[in-house]
Image (cartoon, rainbow, N blue to C red):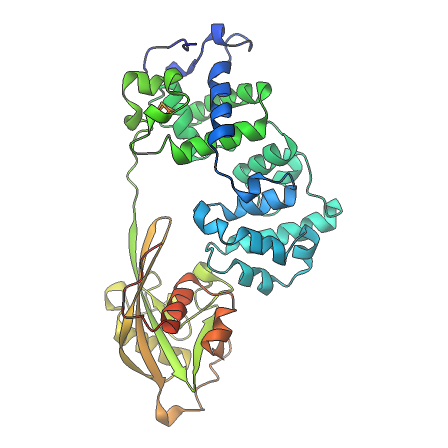
Length: 412
Ligand code: SF4
């Protein structure tokens, strides 16, 4: 069945996908043709990846997977999801665990506000919902740290709540299907996309619709070079019919910022100095090597963010030495050991790692920094690996273990 097509538009007026003939929805409601949604669902049933969180209806397991998957690749989550659930099999056990244990289990997944929120959420569920994740969208949205996207995903998959998880993938697919060339983040377009999705969810299982759209966005209808030849929706797709799929949505230049960090690997008697809380706005609660961050600039006493007289261009090995001295550690910086590279959503981070030794005349007297400075500790590599570590510290330690720090680390 061919969908009723409308003329392309620059202002979102082409949103009447399917038209009245394709739907039993009330006149005037934009809809997707029922056949299109059915094709998408049947493609999803046959083609979707066998992922462990798709084999369960346990709301807690679904919640953990949805939070882990936020801005994190499926391949990365696959290595951590089951071990996390083995360590904390129920929401009550997660709530009862010390936050440090949760952070340690999360280590390497990045975005460490997530485990903090998840821990707070678990406690709220135990305290206010008898340990059962609530089954209404309003109650889910009231839980700490649960935004509309994740609440809709958990609600639709675990409880069949008709709520669309709208993110960039979903907006892109819906706009392409409807031939909408306008910015999908504009409120009028967003409202119409929501209306289309709501209509589809009245006729089909909401969780399946959400997951099918997510899967289509991840595997077929990609931002660049969508695989229209393999797409179950191609015969219904307005953008494909008009050959404008790559022009939708209109490009917004992504700003990727380059950031340089300078870290000191200070070794003494086979133990390494690690700090916690030196960059609370970036890696709160995670241990890392003493690190000067070009984003934070200065080298003033005890607070890398407070730097008077320093600026980004001066951040260097010399500034790293000053930073360490200001923190209360007198060290001799040695040669550069190597570079660790890693990335976040809009940042490309290069960490220059230097070898360092405590200055011999200060051995034993510089280990007690002033109050108010970051928490510090001396750890063997094996002890450190078990801590909740920032991503660059974990990569540095892994490189130390394999003695290959001089080789640049591959960005994730
Ligand atoms: S036909 Fe192409 S543009 Fe349209 S939904 Fe499928 S992959 Fe996306």
